Length: 525
Image (cartoon, rainbow, N blue to C red; front, side, top):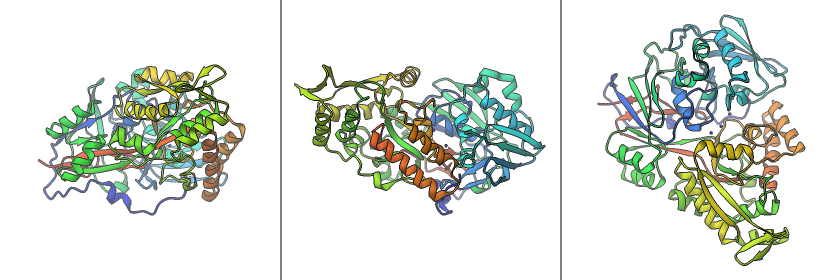
């Protein structure tokens, strides 16, 4: 589910982001690619989806104003250049000419304006894209190929966040024609156009033969080589592996850790670990619901869980643990927080005792109430229940009466939004540390920890407006320290999509944030 004026890694990492299988034969222009996809689709509408795994599908249907390289450089795409006013409140974009949507509608400044109006309309109920706009919610067509965004306050993350697939530009004709059914008729300017969607089964795309405006950073001229792409939705990880091994798919997303280790060792397939930037796999902890409303309980949870042990139990130990709110590689990642909560069961129990809890038999109690809560997990994502069960084991060892409840996505979302959950593992993708505002500012959709602190809110606001990269880093270090001190977020592990490919498939890459991109891909006979 996830997003600059910042310090970037040096250029040149695009090469490592591409599958390196050697291919000397001419590409098969009639090739049909099948991808074993791990999670169901909530909506293909980039303005209303809240799912991480819809991002890569939309990245191939829709283009964005800017393109983010894997190392977060902001490069031209539908916008060829841009300028920012001295006060940081106005962004002026010169748009690419000669671009058409899949329905034949021309792309121009009016199309961008229509998209912004659609995203910001209350009727749309945008999830991620409305937040990515931040305070820059007004767009004006200066002329046919010049569009200007106006921000109420300076917003440093704006440029980079325009490169996320959730900011994919949709056909204004489709927006007007399909209304609430727009997600069933996704119409962009991307290298692949929509063919069909069967819920919980597959999404089928075909090559957009008129495509000739791919991002220069990807270095692929003209339309895609692959004629058709089927995202075969296979949530069951064993079934997804079997499908891939039998050759029914040529790319497998979210490869289970035990198979990733085995396949890499065998060298039979191509391996592409796609780093998904942002907050990693983590768990918000509800600060408003007993017993996690007690800071002693929240801190004890942090000390009680052996993350390496959890990852070994749930995912064959294939992922590095995460100990900070922002993943390594993100701007403002703070290494000084890595040892804030070492695995220490004795410290967990001492923290509870100091917080006024007493152990009665196997479990802790306070004011006549047992320290009991439930870890909620999405039932359709196999790794989340496994992580929850591994976490449960460690928490029960220190005297917490913890249960695991698996929920389908709608019920899981409602529980989080309503504040009914205590703790739940999940992910959030981002390309800027301002991602934290979605989770820790009052009133935000993802403020599932229900934690609110005026001083923290002020810091986050400063981080959004500060143009100086060094000062922004310092601000977000302070933000993260507050979150860790209050124990309202438990980092679990680094977020990496373990992608396996057939040796016949080459050229698969990804954009900044970790969204697989198929324009430069080829599939040999």
